[in-house]
Image (cartoon, rainbow, N blue to C red):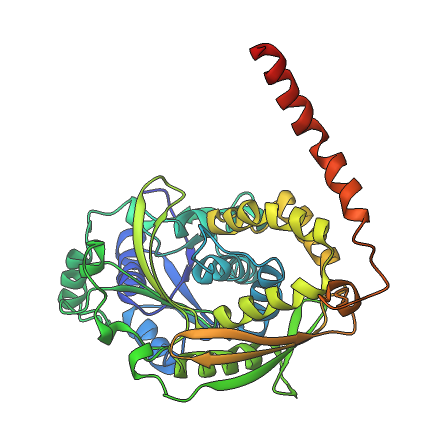
Length: 403
């Protein structure tokens, strides 16, 4: 092994990173500094800090990054209505660039010569972390244990943890890989690897089953300013507070559960179960407000870029020049997206009840089915004939060939 003096490990306190901490110390004989980002996953960070210390960490960083995560990563993506393969609201994907950036900053601060993560060699996170590392330090050394060691399964990791007396939350009964933050929580592995198997109800933590949700609907109003949500029911909140409140409301009504088989960047398909209650509400409300405040051609152009924008996030290119270009264009489109959306939450559904804005370009005078003096219906005849011209010419040529 090439000599390593000091490593900064992205440490969640879960099975993988707990084993990695001990493995790094034993394998490289180096000092290991752990970095745990609080991005809303509701973990016991005192316990995580204690476990890191007991497992051999020389120094421990635990930082509250919730506001930065929502303000600088979640909200920009939701201004773009980002969604991967029509279902996934990118909860894990959006967290990785923030963690990678801060991890490199700590490595510089501590004089570390390497960084490490717990992503497997099969997954997307290895790409997201490492692209983030290289974007901020092109010469950083990366240690990816899953690509080096012979612990080739979670069963082997649990055995390693038991042997070394490492406390981990994963059990043989619930061997799921989970990742949580203020935007979502994901579940993979175990019986979920069979796409025919229904997710057991007891894995869900953010949402009640729609069957058990309240029998009475709840109405909320969400206010936006230039594409960003700023208030719930007239109560202005910080970015993290607002998403937390939407999570509470959405979770209460069973909103935001998704079960998908997605295409990973590395080439394989993977089954994931996600809970994204607040994000589901937010995206629906944002699109409803855009429907009355955004120009048609701007919307169509922006919508055509959503798959590319979302794939860049999913694949780990948050810090790429093409991402910066797309974000600038998207943010320009959001200058008029201000107003209020009224929604009903009921048994897994969030239904738009109304939308209003001082920036609205919707006109009742033009859209009405009643009599009006602002639109001449005769004008439609010429409009239609001009648009039909190429179709008429095409058919006339066909007719000539047949005759």
